[in-house]
Length: 94
Image (cartoon, rainbow, N blue to C red; front, side, top):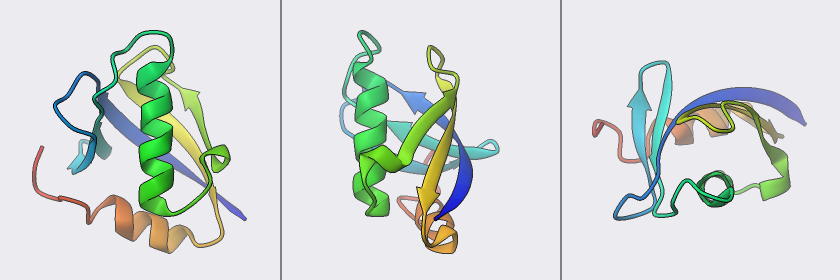
């Protein structure tokens, strides 16, 4: 397993859960969950795990836990697939 650090700009209380695409030096992700009681962070982890086809336990928030701008550590056997997917989902919207 290889470690990848991903910067995420999280927008809670959105109308739907989605990875918007490239944003600043990372990606923008929208979740419907509110930013209370870890709900938005949990929704972020589950959405990314589903999209990248990995276990949620392979994703850890390592920075920005109480902020919209987050850094995540992602453990994956194929970091190139992870990078391709993170920048291809709905890219261009932002």
